[in-house]
Image (cartoon, rainbow, N blue to C red; front, side, top):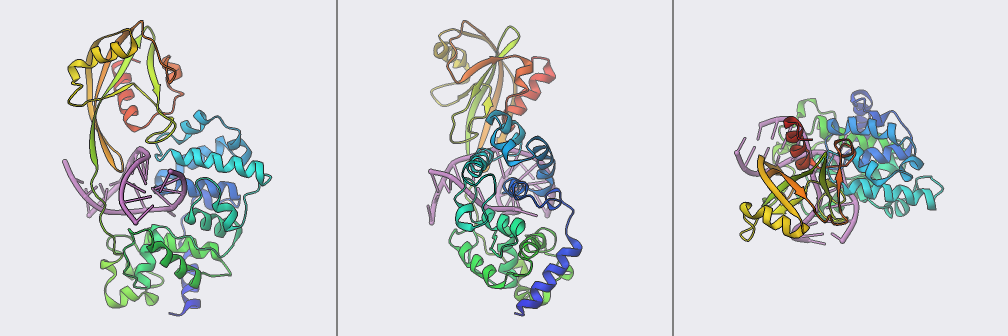
Length: 352
DNA sequence: CACTCGTGGCA
DNA sequence: TTGCCAAGAGT
């Protein structure tokens, strides 16, 4: 293919048609970094309001470095993949301490930061610093699999290397930022997963798949296996004007997020035995349990089927990872989607 | 490498 | 309703 003409067509199209996104109005490497973390596996339309609030709350790298983790997670609430937020802060603190607050501009150094993988490293280096480094995400693999007619399975980790080498070969050294963003923008607006808009494509003359009529058959991607289901009882245990909340462990699913205490329902623990079970574990009395809602929550790799209860708690011995909170304090705790569903039902009923 | 880790939109 | 997907990284 004609590399220089491809670069010109791609970058020319990008400069004319690119969307006006908030993170395209800054040159601050820190703010660009924030946007790249938020955009991981997350749609642009979802990220926009989060990004704006986040930059308002933590305008500089030092603001985020100094932030309380619970305040940070509250800002991230609803965005998902919460370890991104904690890794981001760890990375930011590392830059504050070891790099004088200046985001490093080499792949080796920036890749060593927590939460910064091969894609994010290349994205920040090219967009914030104009360095010709590859930034291969799902868009880029889809677009280039068609343009270069690459038939490797993009679901396999080692395939990414093929695309990184391809980008390294064809990337513009005059404008690496527009080149990388142009590939991604093309994937988002034109070269979409299903029914790509080839007639509107600025680089279709360079596209091998288009010439062969194979654009619908690429990329090759094996299917993911389906999710497992878990059953839980989620309990709003009340005492006076307070409700009992529980902080999840610092690693794993929804790490450090808060929830109404949950009990996994197995063959051993039937719903009817919940009061008894909890009374024993708290060495107090959990009574008047009443089911008020039932819902399903789908995560990326598993499903929760949740029965929501209200109950009364008396003389409970509360372990360290739990605490009684008022309605006002409840609003400050970072919670995940399923807990939000329960909370909404409670508020509608006037229980909190 | 295989698996974990959220959420909302849409065909 | 179900499955797939969207600017991936950590373990």
